[in-house]
Image (cartoon, rainbow, N blue to C red; front, side, top):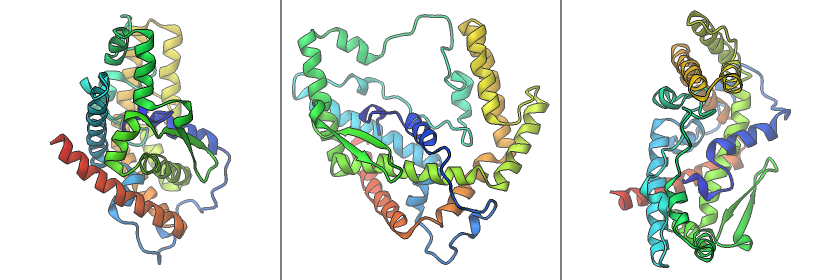
Length: 310
């Protein structure tokens, strides 16, 4: 789903959840993810995909985003406006520590700063909005996302609250794809909440730590003596405080690429996905049922999006 449709982008959603849940206790013995609740029915593939986020999941996310933008632009044009984001739909960000996007990292590193010393270029939305008068810009925002009273909260079991629009072309486009803006928001946020809880368990597992040790040995062999991926990112971020944008970006990209390649050597993606699947078996029955329901609704939305895009 287009990240602009919520109050946070997808990476920011996960980061916010991780920050909010730091210190929470997850009573799960390390190294036993595959043995949890073995007698419970396994989650279906579509529900598991909401947690493990493989390549097929991200491809579907891209289709959903393109379809939403097409519908939103169609809605805006009916009001004498347009949704400029449809001109160049952003690529869904699939880069995570344990699931790195090597192609992206070769271009943008960790996305910590500018990639050169040139002025930042305007987005298509910025260019379009500059063509509108102040009154037209106000009408644009109202038509796109409604007003302040049209922002509805969704509170997760963790206590965190996110908002989403229930009026305007954003809401209409999501309603066309998902059945309602509320269903779209639930599909967006609820699985992320479950993912964060399971991820905390996974990174405490001995199998994850063994993979990180292999990753660290690989990085050391490339001249980067980091014990954790957080240290790698910190080193890359530090460069932006002491060097020009171009020099810092060069160092950031070099570290980020090595990080991604060593994650492949260590089998980090395979390890974390396996742990997430294993720990997902321990989800309470009500949460597992909810995930299955949301996965089924998302599958229907993907089918509608494919029909629209193709």
